[in-house]
Image 1: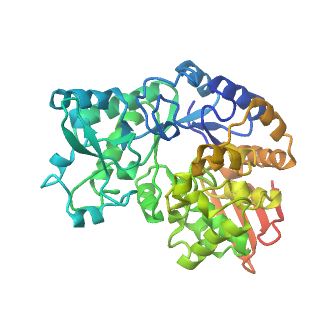
Image 2: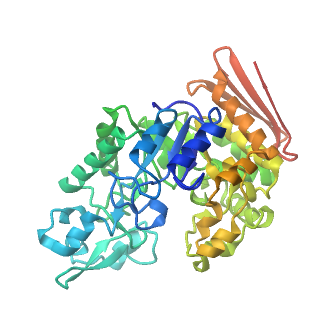
Image 3: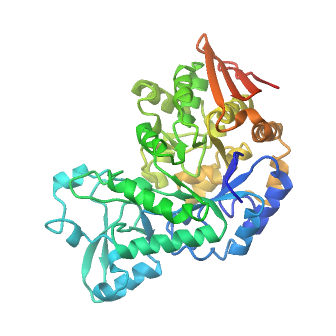
Length: 472
């Protein structure tokens, strides 16, 4: 099914029900009019990071189902797939072949070997300091080959995620083949995970390296566009990077909105939110919550630094079971750019504040995405997080069919579903339509969406969380 202007659900294959067949049942039982699309988070065989260390892209993890299950869902909902353009699993056949055969491997050019990349086989301290990285040292893992040789290979994230050398023809062919398969198996749009890290170049920070990153993006677009499929680069960084991508006509994420909405509802002041809504591109997907934490870095310079810090601190003081320790080594999470919590708990498990946050999101420019925990107004799952000692699992609850039946009867969820149906069906929300934002006394917010003779208006009090929607 082609991408359309209806809300997209984000879920793992085994989080709304145990597998793809149960997910299909949930979609047709509860969400036929509430969502138009589904981002099924990585459902390929994987060795780590909840699917983000893929072994391949031509199979569905047997625990979840088959491509027939995927295609069945795609008959009624447009689907987003993930392609990890930056890396592949250490346990993939490609990397295992390289470990075994080394120079004789057909896949040796898929990976970035330090001895070939750096002039002296190792980066200097200055070169390491320049790299935009997720580790306190140079991004590598040591590989022991079958013959006993040891080498350093580029590794940005966890050691199960080996970076790909996107410059080589071997990798380019792998990318073309993988993307073509996704298009044939039901994808309407492909999310390019960790896209900005994909190009490595000496004397740069190896993050969104121009112009090389544009060449890669257009090469990928050329592969999928002929099959009627779109792409969505995933980048958590300064909003100006998203703006650059939008100017070239690509879809982008609005990762700044979550923190700006929290700031407005925590402080009762919508000044920063209003400014962002007025400058946001129309061709974007909006978020409040995702499978990761709430991104802080994305709002930089859209609010003063002190306002960002204040918002971050209020997540811990106003949120329900939102604690700083969940972003530490004790919970295997040292990502300083995010706070781990559900959006509902970030707002203190308050129904009124949460519904207003969603109403603002639905009136913002672009297509809204709703994460499955947020769909059911889920609170922080402390039990799961303590069991796994993974801070991000606080927002990754597994819902059984019985739980879903119960949660969908909650008033807050019923009201949210009403808002979702309204957003999906009212003509005023056309992507090519217009928007006007008004703010009185800093806390009386009005967002008006119009298209032709149609209009819909949200009037909200950012202090009391009361809101009203009028429309023709």
